[in-house]
Image (cartoon, rainbow, N blue to C red; front, side, top):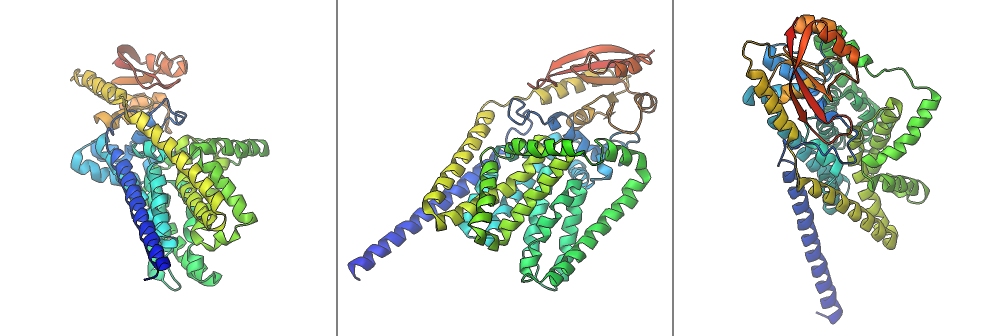
Length: 501
């Protein structure tokens, strides 16, 4: 063997060894942060973080599982007159019902289910990127998803975004393997689309991204791809129609209240422009580094790296981001958890762009890689900083409230109030919201015969008329006042005993 050949062999062997160590490091990071999500699951959401404008941590977990709570507590899917997301979005409540069948009402078990969905999300990101790239590219993308702070914090709550992302990625992976005339796979794809739509209705905005991989699979023959897409959409539409007939039709009042709660009319031009500009400001919720970097990636790919679009996953990720952006701009109100739907495609976009940049302009590619790594370090620091000092205020307070309620055996255990659904999830006490839902507060008092009322920062100053309605029929006796969370608006929970006048 010549000296040059020996040197080349040693260099190749050394590069392969470094590559194996890098792969092992990425796998270790992914596993560590996936397992970390399962620990301290009943700890409070970090309300002092940049994601504090999202109040899902005191309402939405209970709301989205309320149908399962109703089924477990009353044997009925809907509690008449109450806020009932489960009639339009039944997939997560069905999964929660299965969990409650084995565990009883259990917030910890339900959060574990959401974390399990996040694990599958990370795995599916790897498989999808690996499908269109290399193993190492897939590991980099999966590592960015696993260490994302916004995904880490919200995946530890029993919310809908994580299962929606999991189903979206599964549907994309299936679409990427659905060739011409593969109508059996198209039907399976339609089932996944239907499950997406019945998990969270905003999934409709993701349909173009999910269906796009059919086009390159059919060698860009539009007729073949359109046939497969049409078959999939027909199956999804059939599932949606079945849900409208079986669940929505018997509960039209609850459905119309759900549909019209935040208004569905088109925003005016001025509001639309405001929302458009605000989207780019709030987009950093998805990731403060990857969001601006992804914008650079898209513009640079349009100007001088157009070969990136030869990779179907790059175009798919852009369609995913565009669909979520269109919804957020039209919807106007979008809390941080809505922006978490952008995080996965941002990770994919930036990894694919950086990989292409390394091949075309190595120096620029290395700069991009350092920026991405720096952003990942910021996310890791944010997670570890919270993890080092978790608090359990809500879990503790909910247990104290349950103890107070159960100490009055002759008194109704029914708890009325905003956030009572979350309390139901943590305590298995019956309850209903005092504001959300089609019925008036007076009707709720007549129908539910509550024995207790919970109020946030609760002296009635925010809505004195509602307290006045209750006080006309009940004497409100304060039974406990609890400091909960570090939020600027929701930071104190008061429990009142309701004694009929």
